Picture 1 (spheres, rainbow, N blue to C red):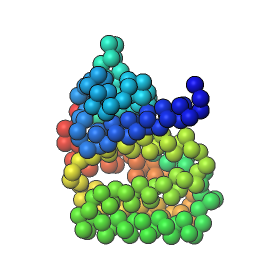
Picture 2 (cartoon, rainbow, N blue to C red):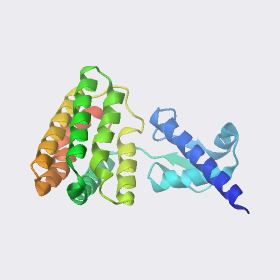
Picture 3 (tube, helix red, strand yellow):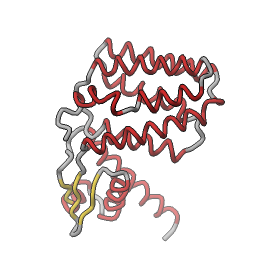
Picture 4 (spheres, helix red, strand yellow):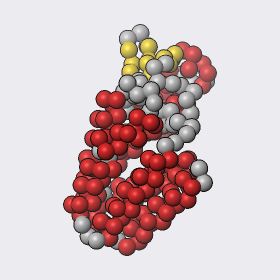
Length: 224
């Protein structure tokens, strides 16, 4: 098998993966449903190899469970999952901020401020998708400076599990407004050079399930 074939197979697997994730994000594939490999393979016009590889990646990321006899079940998002993800993301982002702190110059902090200001405008305009994109970029400002690509990838995957599975059409305005205030508090701590306080704020406030629970239950009304 030559290098060209390997690259083509890898590219096809990634395309199938992205297609399935988009179907999940938009609610065309719902939690609790089953994915039929035969039907999906025919619909996409691909062999079962790239489909199976894409499903294996989705299983590693906890989006699906592969059962015997080629049955694939799309995992649901329970309260236990959400609690666990908050704890893990909080720990990851706290560690990332500690590692990135000395690399965060004035330009990086100014970028966080600009993104937080943009989030305020997005919420005022009722544009949740814009808010969501700016929110991810806000966190990525320090995540991308932490020097740990595995940490970044895991944090991104867990956020997809929380918010894109599927992404609700509406949003909880009070939660987004509260989140913006928490972002501002974080920016102020970073500007003041308070490394530990900033890391603790990310973990113990911003990503604390107990602190955010009243909003979480409104965002996931069917949470069990």
